[in-house]
Image: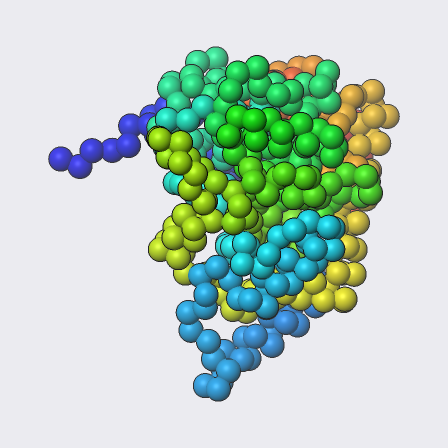
Length: 407
Ligand code: MLT
């Protein structure tokens, strides 16, 4: 008899963004004449930077000739890309990350989910609330929690992120083994200072814990005081793994390229307390289960770091940040308390009403798709998240509609 993984039964019926897309599809089916504006899932709308397109075309041409054709590449990524990442994303910011500590992959979503394979079944896991649902759902699938009751799974240590703590969680009051952090934050758009990250690094050291640091939105940071990488914090190399993505940085949501940094100095422990380097374990996992990102895509990604690519990706991010500023100022003008949208593409709005009801109201009355805060956890109840990823025209039209409906 083929038995199933019964942990799946603990999950909500569908993944947050699938549920939203189902509701939007139903609405659209009933109102085919209405123009829906999507400010829900953070999916980019603007074309890839020309430097990336040019590099991709060139690489495709190389694949057409026997002398330049490439088959399997290194699973961890080509050296040309890993070296460009190490130099530009880390060395340039004073962070010590070697090229061979970088694992190129097809997405931070997959990597944040897959990394758990390295850890024991029984762990105490600290999960911020609200949170990117992938961290929660994948641990539930792996059987690391009990059932859900009133929006919370038994077994997690939830870290409340609220208006009062600026949506940066306080340290747990009990020892935990694994800590998820994401800054600039998805969904709240909050950022963490060096001092706040240092406190987490010190906590992880003291408790032999590991931080999984999701920095997928670092490119949106404009405040020069804020760290972009956890490795800018002293000691982080021993206790943190960092996830990055080109999805939002360079418009690669459909192109797929990301990377994970596993420093050679970061360790986990055996039952007996012996340290085990996680780099070697992740390398083993990655080479066994992943065959690498395609050559043309890695060349396109390398072009992000060329002088033209840097200029073009900055312009792309500036464009979305200008959208975010328009959304932010409209909501403030309408009397709402908002977070994010300055160093982040997400605007977190305190609507003081049931999130899903507010979501439905905006869909039906303004034909605007947002993301209900409650979908990110119990502390997200009463909030909605608005994404800045859309054309200027659509953002302006959406704000016009919001003004009408919310004034
Ligand atoms: C989001 O909207 O939270 C993100 O687009 C989801 C993702 O990157 O997987």
